[in-house]
Amino acid sequence: MLLRSLLGAVALAAAGAPLQAAEVTVKMLNSSPNGAMVFEPAFVRIAPGDSVKFVATDKGHNVESIKGMAPEGSAPIKGVVSKDETVTFEKEGVYGLQCAPHYMMGMIALVVVGKPENLEAAKAAPQKSKLATRRFEPLLAQAAEVK
Image (cartoon, rainbow, N blue to C red; front, side):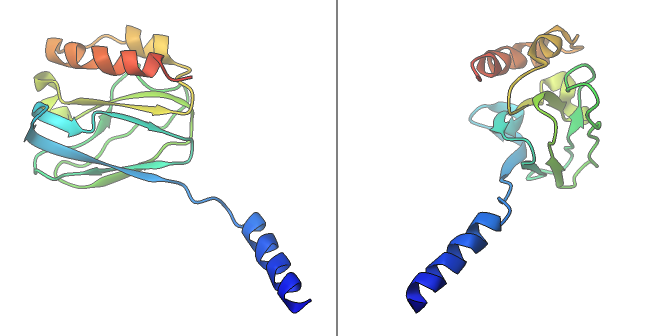
């Protein structure tokens, strides 16, 4: 009888416990097998409420939103150069991100939170770097496969 009561109490406590949000780590690197000036990984898929920790593994990098590549009403992201930045993503959609000092060198990343509801708008956002445009193509194709 005591064991049954104890098991019941444990089950109730577990049912009432909030789910822990996940945290994904993305390194900001000068070089990797994937090229120079990269976020690694460059494509991240998470659930609303999850966080991404952008780690300045190599100094001189930051993480910032790219205009037109975030869900409407989401807060802009603007990290400090050479500092780690943890971002919690609440709104579903596609977030295009850049390292501002190295954007022209194609240092971009794509975070998909839940469903990629703003994917067409993100695809249509003008890029000022041909290398960034080229690097976004496979990432946006991956986002299109998310259901």
